[in-house]
Length: 113
Image (cartoon, rainbow, N blue to C red; front, side, top):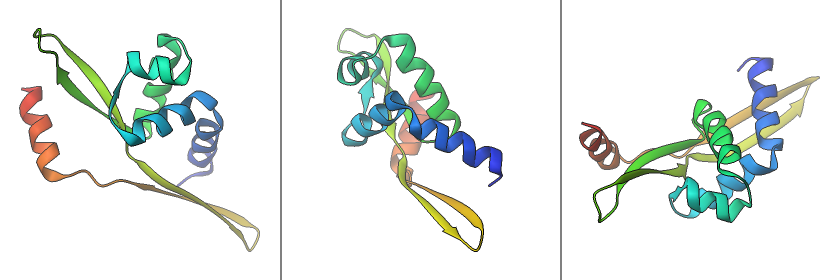
């Protein structure tokens, strides 16, 4: 991981809204509407943070279907652990993501068709 990538990850995790999204969506997948309520933020703020979190593969999205036939996205946290080690004049940042269940991946691919 380059120093720029490490800096970007640390800046993202420093953001209170990004952290709130990660925490709230770690329990169960949530829509932007629900994240807006739970994180006490505007929808544009949530969407901007989700875009940044998706770029780092810290969250993943799924399509949900309403009983009335409409669909919407929900977001789930993939970030599992961030570890920082400082030794020998260097800093090492390690990121671990939750593995995706193959059955869930197949279902999502099918739904996207």
